[in-house]
Image (cartoon, rainbow over all chains, first blue to last red):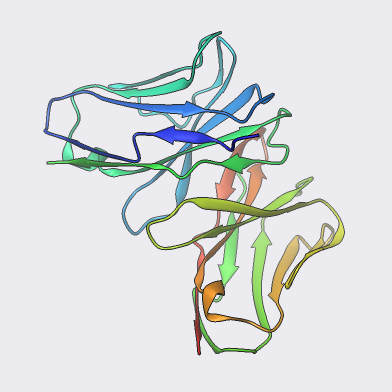
Length: 114
Length: 110
C-alpha cells in the first residue's frame, strides 16, 4: 500500500507561468488536504477536498490558485501566473476519515519561481 | 480560531538525553497531531491523540484535554532524531482545518 505520492518533487517556473502539483492519496482515502509552507514559516492550511468536491477552500488565495480532486486520478493544485512569493513547499495529506482523522503526508512539492 | 504554541523553539541535546517538547493550544479540541519534518524532507505523522498517552518506540506523546496541553517525549535520544517537531490541532470552527505550531528544531549531538 503505497503512501501519499506527490509529484513533481521539485518544480521550477518563471514568473507568469503555470504550476501544477499532483497528489495521489493513499489507497482507500477519499479526503485530501493541501498545505503550504513558505520559507522559514510554519505550515498553513489551504484546501480540503473529497472526490469531486471542494469542502473547504478558506485557506486558498482568492486569485490564481485552484484545486480539484476528480473522480479518477490525482488531486491537482494549480497555480496560474506564478509570482516569486509562490515559492514554497506544498504538502498534500490524505485521510480515510473526515475532520482530520489520522493524516498521512506526502513528501511535498517544492516550487521555485525565478 | 485555535492558537497553537510550542516550546522550546530550539533544543540542543546530547545523545542519550531525555527530551520533552511542549504544546499548548487555546481552544478545546478533540485530537492533536504531532509531526516530524527533516530538513528539506517530507512530513511524517508521529501521533494523533485525543486522550492519555501513546507510545511508539522511543517516542511518547501525552495529552491533557482539560489543561489544553500536550507533550512529546523522546527517550535515549539519537542524532537521527534531529528534526523539526510540529504539533497541530483543529481550528475551533472547522475540524478540517489544522492550525500548526511554529515547530521545535531539535538537534541531537553525538
